[in-house]
Image (cartoon, rainbow, N blue to C red; front, side, top):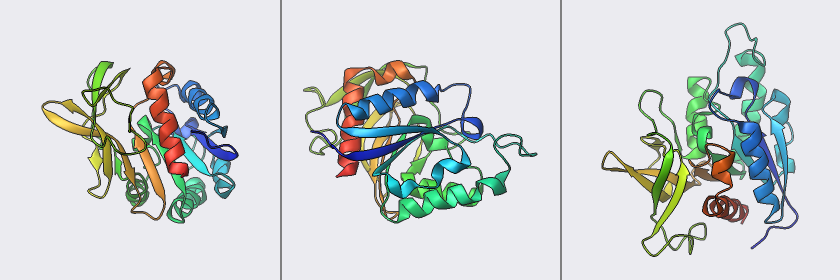
Length: 235
């Protein structure tokens, strides 16, 4: 399955939207390469305010950015006001039918202000909750496929309806009831959604909590999952 002729914008967190734990340059390169393998031409941009001005030129936007670290004096990429137009453009694009694939730490990206945090949650169908969301120590983990018939996951799991990956297992995310959960993982005797689809905001989104580092994206099953997510959200 391929999507020749389709274009994707991969937004790699930097500056205001980078953190010390995620090498978004390396993971964005892996994402772009994986998309290219299925015919999607991907352009990688850092999260500068000017990166959001032509979203309509792309068939898919992939968000690989981190939690915001705004500085009171605006020393990191400008103050909140400087980001108003960029975040407005992202929200308008998504609600007008935009196709969005949000990865791993993107559950906590673009949540600089309370009003926008609600918008980002609505676009993703969920979010990281500071003080509640967490992940156990990274290592090999089992992930349960909840919808074996969905095009993203059909035929991807083993006979026991599971996937295995050496990655972080995000837990206690806030997931909207309208979200359609595809994959979960079990921690503290609770099933935690880690992959879901969402369309209640006017566009179409896949959120995938896997993908902590470049090594994670090189695992064959995880790479196929990413490619299927992109192809499905592109239609």
